[in-house]
Length: 609
Ligand SMILES: *[C@@H]1O[C@H](CO)[C@@H](O)[C@H](O)[C@H]1NC(C)=O
Ligand SMILES: *[C@@H]1O[C@H](CO)[C@@H](O)[C@H](O)[C@H]1NC(C)=O
Ligand SMILES: *[C@@H]1O[C@H](CO)[C@@H](O)[C@H](O)[C@H]1NC(C)=O
Image 1 (spheres, rainbow, N blue to C red):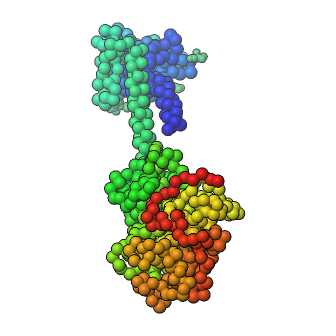
Image 2: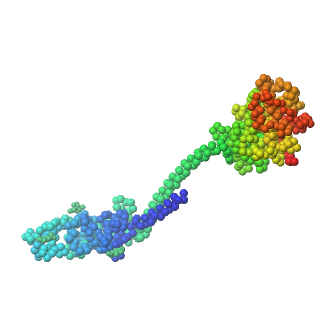
Image 3: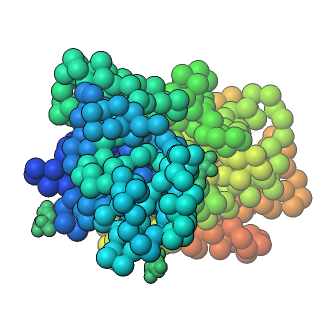
């Protein structure tokens, strides 16, 4: 706005100056001792039209600085005096010969009345001008000395005067002037009087006459103020007008700019919207807490609740639904939050849940994910157990393969290796097509790919899925193989189903992985109650074998996720049964015993050895 404003200020000063210089009816004169020119007269070239009453009052200065008036039609006389009170003008002809110009004068067309030397009005007469070759004593009274020469005489004779025609025998008539004042020979001054405008009373009170501003019918004002302050007044008036119009212009400019800025705002908003759309595809967007409230409709619909916070359903825009995980503030610095945003904010895989955005607004921390309508794998397993509905083995296989690919991508597909450390059914979400997506990267860790082991100050993970080396370093070094272990446990749980562990008489007291391993090495088929046969049975066996490979006690014995994916993609028939995944000493140790019951319990922190 600043440059426009400066221009406006400059313009207003400029116009003010102009108005002071040009729009002024300050009295003026052609020379110091010359008559003062003011209303009803005006200086034709110095003052604007409204300063004078009528074109007949126009004056100007000649090269000798004399004040010149033009009488109709084209007679120029010099103004000697102007009496504004008695409204009289005294004129003279510089060559002292009024008669010279007589033929160009139409006194009846003039604004002025011609007066005699004693201020009586002249009766205008028609005059005949004669050229007489011989001097005529009888016509002496009509003679005009300034035009006559020795050889001839010029006489001005009013028409109808009683002149004997004989006396004009030697004369020729030059021309006739209609309605002219009878000017005596040798007269020095011409006296004129004006009646309109009638300012005598006003002027006699020492006031100043002027035309009413903007009045078309020549209405008069009589101001108390002396001329000088009247000029100031007018100047102020003009200045006011100028400033007023400038203000109008300024307001218009402002309004226009406002309009433009609103339009730009709109365009910008659209641009931002577009940008965000593109941006969202690559990086998570930052939301304010108010955004979250709006998105979740004041946190009205709860999707679930976890150790780290409550998950609400929200609507991003149009048909895009999101899951908003509001983290507990009590968690302090929110390492988990940083982990999640930093980790999955940058990765995109069909089997990894997408982080749409996040919120770090004051103390509020929230993560916004794509919304997956089919809930978690855990619920699916539970529901299957509850209502007995068949959960097709092919489907199970697809889900397992999807999860394996997701984990493989985390391990191999990014710049840095991402170790999830919390693979469990609860953290596998299913979309509309039961396509699994890994979520909850709260415990994830970024490692360089070359790193063979990860240092940890605390145990991470969930009992039942946690690799033994994560619980205690005595079992090996923590690495990506720890995720493989968790995946193996998950796979076995999918095959076995929770019901096998919780309700079945055969396995209620037995650790399921061990139970199924025992069956496999005995060459027995998959348990009948799993309701699988033929190809399905083959697939179930494949899943089980892969799962058992993954949960090998020693990390080095476990395959990498890449191998796991290959094993799952393959036929499955040629998969060798792995060695016993359990520590040689025995059977279910304290760790595996807790499986199931302490499913959701996070481990206590165990200091690193
Ligand atoms: C007329 O007046 C101007 C100043 O107003 C002066 O410079 C000039 O010499 C004058 N001319 C005559 C002929 O007096
Ligand atoms: C003189 O002026 C009057 C009024 O304007 C006009 O009627 C008349 O014709 C003029 N006479 C001459 C000779 O121009
Ligand atoms: C008057 O008449 C004489 C001759 O009679 C002539 O020479 C002179 O020029 C005339 N004057 C005018 C002003 O016409």
